[in-house]
Picture 1: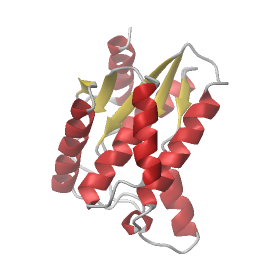
Picture 2: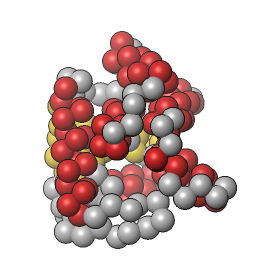
Picture 3: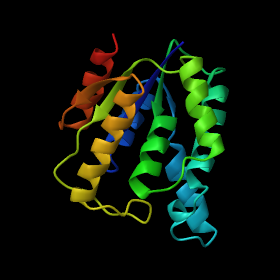
Picture 4: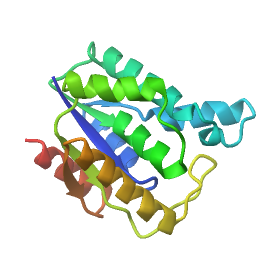
Length: 178
């Protein structure tokens, strides 16, 4: 099973491309952080990412989804983010790397869970604010660099997906992983 990571700053278009891959019949695993934020906001917590344990919660959900995905069709799977993205979030927000995130980072490295090529979506010209995404373009640029640093430090190779229409970006993703 080959597991590919789609990553980049918020608003870069990775989830849009993931939806196109899914519609084309590929196995896609949803982003954990967005789902956790949405659920927390529905429960009345407006900014759950400010809670010190948030990246541990993200890493735990990512782990559970990755393990559950082993029963899904392959041979290729596409993950909208990984625990290395949770590490980037911890670094960007100044949150501690908790025990769950640290263990998950060790596990994915020891078990070589993900392919060594990571598909990083370059930012588009603008970011649409949402209740979940509250970052401006300058902040997103800084956050994108934190992702690059986190992945390269951990031995991954970054494959950049430049701004383009979503269908073209989906083709670039597939071409980059052949």
